[in-house]
Image (cartoon, rainbow, N blue to C red):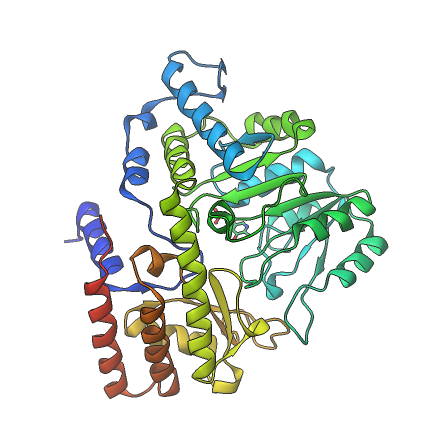
Length: 405
Ligand SMILES: *Cc1c(COP(=O)(O)O)cnc(C)c1O
């Protein structure tokens, strides 16, 4: 007989306890956040916005959504926040629809250089609806080359420039991006999905007042529920709100909005600031340890929670690395590296992020231990002796640093 879903959820809980997640987009949501998601708020319909609803009985819901909006504006210094978007991809589509006409030109980072599918990749609706031109990173340094982006902007005259990425390990210069965008009469959308928690914690520069619109998912470094938020300058508030509802969505998920409010309020505490600082310390320690062990890091290091490792010199592909690490209890994901000649299904790189292991309480010493185990495994992915040694080491770490549930 098939296992019950309840049993499968328990199995997943065990899996998470027994494995280290080095997936850069993953994190561990605190209990209060998970409880809000499972709360009675999920029973309520609340189409519309606070005090302008299409259903009755929203006295309490209004207060919750207003708190979420207030917390988002305070944390990111925004004029206006819409906390209803279901997730990052639909939120980006809602931003495009608010600012653009179909066929308009947009500039964004290319996927193989670290951008996101929803930034106009051809398999995404965004790529079908708008004319995207993609900028990449400098082939030598792996870094964004702002003067080249400016040259492209002058040639293509986009109506919108998108900055932000899923696999770029360095800080983003929002001010420079805004100068470029505004020089050519374009809006600037900063997609801070990966780094929102770092910005909130004060370890990465803020996108406002530079960007016109800021979109973030709430479930990555921010440690909130799965979902997204769109923030903008006051003059765009009504266009953004109309685009989210009724443009793209129906009833908002008020249980998720409550969880977003909790995550946002939490993110302004000294405790969260310490967490964000530790993420940066851990990512640097991890990068240094991996470099010392002979790994090549794209851009040579990191300013954020994530690292992109170029495995070419190790003569191993991203898929082989991902599979070998998964066997010993380390979950990660294969990733394209800038200029990759291999396919996205078996690319030349692997991406690591330290938000989740930092949330378990690990520090720099543990990062060095993990790097050492990774080096052992990837040097001999076929060796059973090494696999069982690595498995034991990771099991020791996961037991010592359990996820607090
Ligand atoms: C994760 C991510 C998204 C998409 O978020 P989903 O909630 O998975 O749709 C969009 N943009 C960037 C830069 C991201 O990292």
